[in-house]
Length: 153
Image 1 (cartoon, rainbow, N blue to C red):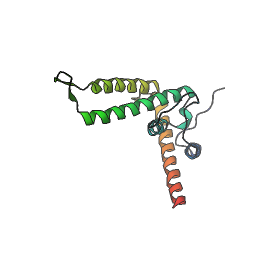
Image 2 (cartoon, rainbow, N blue to C red):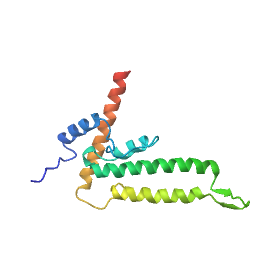
Image 3 (cartoon, helix red, strand yellow):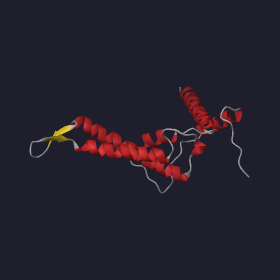
Image 4 (cartoon, rainbow, N blue to C red):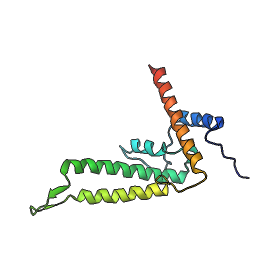
């Protein structure tokens, strides 16, 4: 028997979004470890979708994407400090090898995003409902955060 989908603009959807927003953020599976500094990227990745869209396999790929995004940020900071052109041991100006590393990370990022279907979208009957569900959950999380701030004040 097929499960019935909840329309994203329904009251049931709004209630589900509030319940999801009240829960702690998703965590990677036990066998997947995040490094120091990966957490902000992890949160950004898992909040890009509604909670019920995530499978355990997707969470593994999401952790890989979070690590990749952290690596990109770390390499970009170094590249910004060093410059795109550096002088090698012979005194010749060359392209900083970090440029190539960043290009490799960018390709990996795009591949992981494609795997998670987080990039561009193809026309699909489910897409408007999916996007509305994501928007509703983001709004619910914002309301939860605002309420928490007011209670702490």
